[in-house]
Image 1: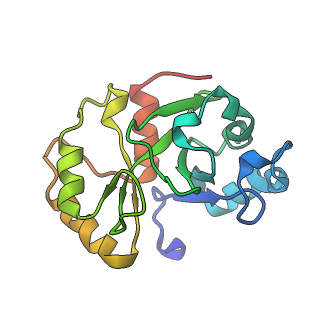
Image 2 (image 1 turned 180 degrees about the vertical axis):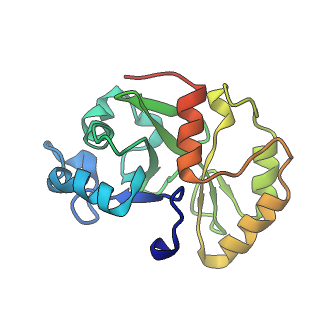
Length: 189
């Protein structure tokens, strides 16, 4: 994909701490953080997905020590957050701000698995949920990050969800998502 990227395309970097360990568990920033700026620039990354084990509902300004490692990088425009400890999402869809950059918490999951909370098992279920949310871009509740599990028909169901969305609901790239939040909402810790 990267060798066919157009100048306006970008990619989302995933960070997991040291190996697959959660970043919040370390008293100091993860050891890769010193190389982060160079790697982000080489990979043309502008958004970062942080996979950690802090329950989304418990994320507060105390998470700034972790988030700031990423948001202090000039290349990073914003973060996405998913809880790797099983819950993955938070239906509140909160957006937190660190260094003037948004961190959007994964709101919904499209996965055919009863073990997870806030799960839509079909694309039609997901579309119905999204269609009932606000659509005004100035309203922070209008934004939803959806974790799509490609296993078990996730991509087929994702296509069904997109086809069933109201015309006022937009599906955008991660970079456009972050830029819309930045342009239409203000906040910060």
